[in-house]
Length: 71
Image (cartoon, rainbow, N blue to C red; front, side, top):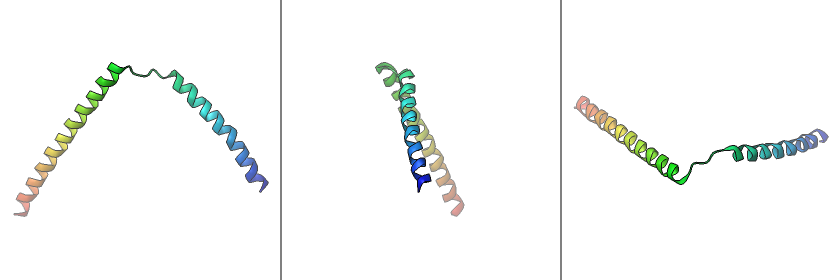
C-alpha cells in the first residue's frame, strides 16, 4: 500500500511540471494572423474538394469496370 501512495505522490509533481512545460512551449508558438488563417483555410478546403473529386472519379471508374466484368 505504501508503494502505491508514493507512486501516486510522485506522479502529481510530474503532471505539474508537464503542464508548466506545455504552457512555456505554447508561449513560443507564432500564431497565424487573420489573413494567414483565412488563406490556409482556403487551401485546406480546396485540397479536400480536389481529393474528394479524385476519389469519386476513381470509385465511379471501378464501379463501371466491375459492372462490365459482372455482365
